[in-house]
Length: 492
Ligand SMILES: *Cc1c(COP(=O)(O)O)cnc(C)c1O
View: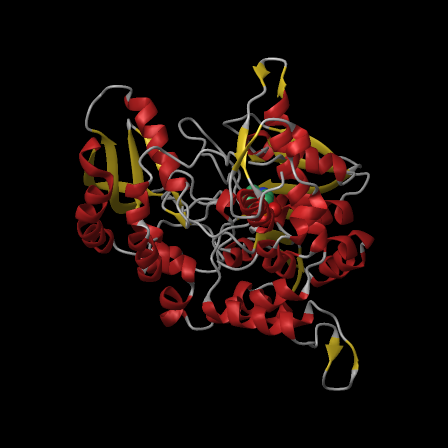
């Protein structure tokens, strides 16, 4: 290819393609070399040239074809390669699924106080394990332990990577080589392969199942206690409910049975809330404090579910047991970093001021948004969305139900409002809907809704005003993108 960068040429044989080195020296390449570095530019150029070569040579089932290319177009393709390679994989999205604590979308959004503290902790040394009073080595748990104890009524506390880690660490400390008695109605699997029986095995404990799926009695627990028993355990039925002819033994009764036999009682609370949610007009969920007061010796719960903080597993309970747990070598492997602690501390502190909690704690603010609010929002957005989608789709405002999510109150719904869309013509309606969903996902700030009942639903509960501005700003691109997401880039 003896062309200048500007003139285009038809290339019919790989030998006419320029060498990688030649492309790298083209003037238009220089800003890319500055931005991405020589190595990445070389790799990307090589990829582009290889694809052109393959196009020219063809394959077993596709004959080779000439291509239109010149140095400029090759640099442009290289640029697109580089942009794709350097684009962040973790992207912000708009969660309009109606599930506030959506595990796949990262669960709790942090309160501003936590965000500020995280930025600080990331950019400055901090007294993570350093006692500023006497200049000696400190313990990272000290940063939050007294706050957690104040908010839960527990004697002591420690923090690990997540609640799964908390359960693992607790069992491995308290029941290594021993038996742990759990009701068959509570052998929960949380999405993503957290299953109580499997965690139990990995922790080195032996699961003893008692009762039946729907009914477990006191005598089931007492009958299973023997010389190898290490603990009695209760697990919160986070993502399911057993209804109908049921019987479960209360936390207090299991604790009493355990203590009568000089055994500890463990509760995996899952979500774990620090407040009586009824005070905020929400459905009731047992609190960590109530669970501690019921006599549980150890309680574990998540930091990023109802608590509304960073991913973490919080372990609270009796002082001697927490001390043992902290001595377990696994604690070091499961401990949290400074960024987590930086986020957790101010999140917990918000709970000291309940009057402001629904304003400051992002998750609670979202849970407590009124359906009227979302309805007004839906009415405002309806004409804008209808205009963006054109005649092909019917857009309606609709009452819907949000969910708390992440294994909290699986059967309770929060009355909400939003928009629902369906194809104006029934022809290939299913395909039209999945394409519509894909168009929303392909936006610069991907919009995640849900397909349900032959329509695409956007629940507006998590669309607060800043997010709504983003949503509106990109509607024009939804209109421009009527054929679905851009097909994967085809070179030149
Ligand atoms: C969510 C949950 C877990 C896992 O907690 P992570 O913080 O996601 O690790 C464990 N047990 C129960 C009962 C849960 O609800």
